[in-house]
Image (spheres, rainbow, N blue to C red):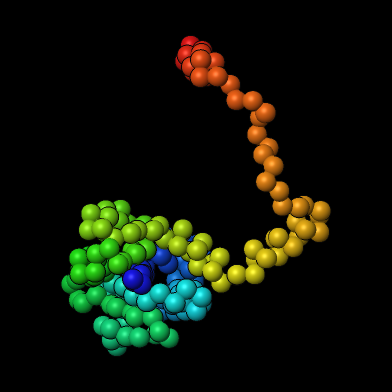
Length: 175
């Protein structure tokens, strides 16, 4: 069962420091910057994505539903919010949806309907990591150069304290 990622477009843009700086120059540039990042993410993850924007903020010549380099882009109708559109998608697809938003109301609604939610900033970090897959390999190579060798040897204390001693320490800490 493939996941369907539904993104609250303006929420992600306004939570991200770089995207919000671009959006301050132009709303259209902010949308395009987000969509460009999503295209890069989609190349590595291949999940179907839908980005929902408020139609009140859209240009009057924009279509309500478009496809942008493989990403489904929705603009809410006049008088309808993006939140309403996202809620209708969640109601329709339920467990199959992953909702990307920092809006607590939408996240709560999605959780109530069995959908998974992820915070906007956390998703931005996941996008960044997905677009740099070589990062983990270079870190490992650097550790090899320093002489690190993989081992299963435990590094913890040689002896665990008894339950009685643990309870005593807890009681003592409460004083």
